[in-house]
Length: 364
Image 1 (cartoon, rainbow, N blue to C red):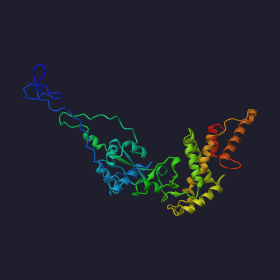
Image 2: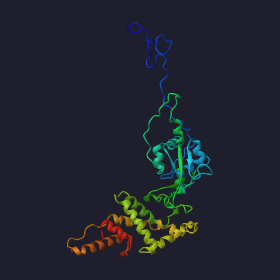
Image 3: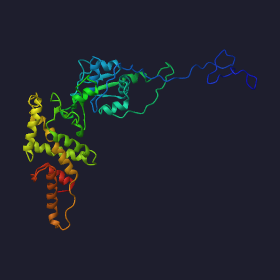
Image 4: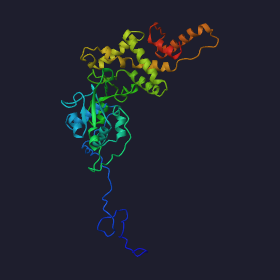
């Protein structure tokens, strides 16, 4: 009983609705509307962790191998339809020749199945997110059926598309020892997109190799690679480090192909690298070891040149005549670069790419 002498249970129930036949005279309204989202797949029994900078196709291939199925069957089991080459028939797409792009709904289903948070997956798989997802809105409930009018459409949008990669955009093979440690011995092959300053493994001294090689390159006989790696890591924190390294890589590549300046040093380094990696001379496709090992052979000089380009002298002595300032800046820039490359002097032909960089910087 309350203060007015009425029972607590009479009238409209607290937090409820009036129903017919309860003596209150109200009509039956039924339960309120509820949001019905598409049914998500169950979580997988295995927890397969991705490798840092791994391609999405490589991770899905390793995930399918763990469950002993093909990639199309794995994705179909979690409600994702695969489109593109090898998506419906065969064993599906394989890394590193192809990449798999998932839409927003497919990424959500993959997160539930792998039991890995979306932020962790997106951080480890740089190609997982190809477009920014739209705003999240609850689906509307239709009056006739009482179900979500977008339920079927949302299920159909859970899809993935296979894209064939060009040679210059394919991922590289990661350090096999690191992959075995990361996967607890389950795998030793993973294809990644590491940045330019992460191509070398400082713990196991492996250089990430391109797909034309059967495995990463062992650089244990080249201690200068480790010194260049640490210098490159410091350079990456410079505001102009990335641009300078891009210029330096293009310049040293042309020097390497034409046999300029550092040819003797690079030939000696190539011999040591080939001695420790017989796969360089046994590669298929008729590609020579000179081409396959070009990036790692020129890496120390590329980093040294990039550091020189970020610290070029800007000024000349005040007593220098105005007509001689251009030649003085030219001489000081070449002396500065030669010192970083450990050369007594540097003579650059007129058509060298280094002149374009110096003119772009304003030092020549």
